[in-house]
Image (tube, rainbow, N blue to C red; front, side):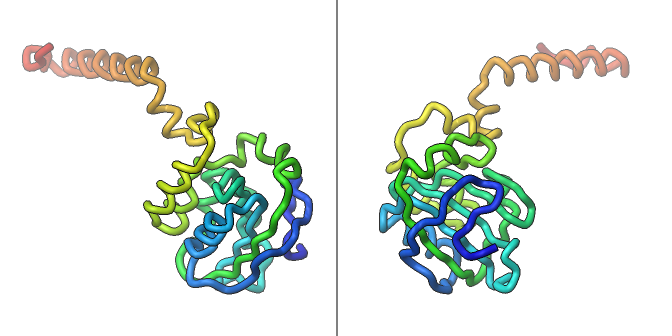
Length: 184
């Protein structure tokens, strides 16, 4: 893979604006945020500088992360963030692209990440994560990109699970002769 190309994701080659080795992914995320980058970053961990397939690609709109893709695992979204070894130095390349060039990729739900997720998962930087969330445009689908957030937002489903668990506990208590010890 040539640097700047993104396999399995339809993103055209952008214009290189930064290429260097940095202390950690947080430096790359902060650079993209400060530049209000619309484009993408190719991040390679130090341990794999000679292995192109260890790279992670992150796209941005106005400096806010939108999607993530990890080449070695072919994982997208938050799974890509989990697959990427976040600690230590890495090579980062930032590329600019017009927003229209990213539109199709940004509509791919399996690749999308919540705005603060890369800063939290890859850099442990809550302040940067908060700044990204504040700058991010309100999107109805953002809750759907994080399975845990989507689950927690579904109050009816949580209530149904709680009712089912209570019924199961009551059934087992009766089965074991402990139903006199349960309080409603």
